[in-house]
Image (cartoon, rainbow, N blue to C red; front, top):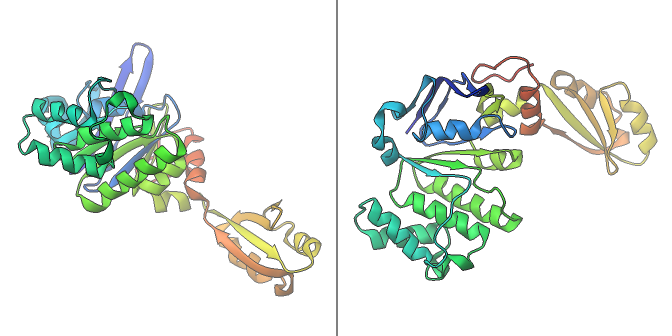
Length: 308
């Protein structure tokens, strides 16, 4: 189910939280919303799930206007906020049973069992929530969202506060949802590597404005520079001298890195005496470079564009 965000504005007093971003989330994709603290990610999610209304603009989920749809949006969208909690004395299974009854779901026992299995909590289902780790609590929250099998999942900073093991476990679950269902997953994060691993497309927000949006593969190649890493054969000093003036040169310890324009990388490689080089590799700049390039701009970017 696709999501369309059109010229959305939201202000809280003197604070402009969103200043006209427009972009589309393709149906069935795993889509990341990136930005620094205060960029407008959480505000956008609050509007997307109908917890607040935009001052201007429009958000549609599967063609349904979120502002006008009311409870019908919540039938389509499952929302996991950054902070959620459950009664400490209840077991995980009891928590999910309450959620299932509130929503009037049929086949509750089977749904609960399937969700517990999906988030890898089946073995802990009958333990009190008070004994759950932060990661287990986040996974239980996700299970509660998945009970109704919503076509859209919105996850606000889903791994915030988790240790590396908890982060890895949550990543595996999101990847499994992506691989085994048709759900559209939208997640926010300030961790670039997380978004690069999980997402097909991304929107980058800064000060409430859209700075870039589009497929990750397109965005991370847009800055137009690559790094050529040379591993010297024998004469390291000779290789270091040979690459001087060919770009931004860094002596990287086990190799020599040269950052240069994509267009000149081939000439650089071809122009180095092969006797000086044991091996080399060419690396794309990655999402981090695209992110910093985007937020450094002075104007909002059009969808699919990273600012120069």
